[in-house]
Length: 197
Image (cartoon, rainbow, N blue to C red; front, side, top):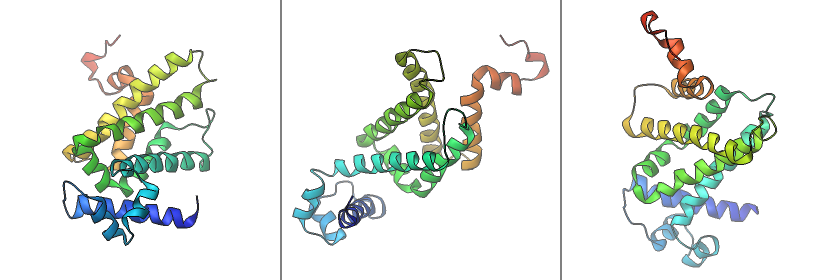
């Protein structure tokens, strides 16, 4: 992407999120965004058709960022570490926590987490396609199950301000993903409740 285009899109995105989060404006107009980004309305429409496209672009940028981090870490089915995956995801969430918080509280942006879920399902399905002896459909359903749960946990953590750190959240989601419910029950059950099947 051309640097000028990228700079303009970033200015638009920054202006939009500043207006809705910092200035607490429920409805933001293109004129307000253009003024805050120091551009004219025509420039806005060269990049976006509506304000909702900004949020979609933000989601795609975060997924692209996660993919880049995974490539840089040389993730593959042989070297995949679920804990490291969550640590990388946490870096992104932490950097944009106020935006994720706003989006998670606003029902109008429910599609945002659906987009992220679908993109992550595709990443996992491609990563593990040759690793498991499952059909692509079955693999995507398993991935959907885990990723939906992971997104739900992150959204609850953001919404309810649970008193655990992001590192603890990464460990918790990693343990739940890798060990499953039975593994967690066996690991944390009291001795008198160890008869788990």
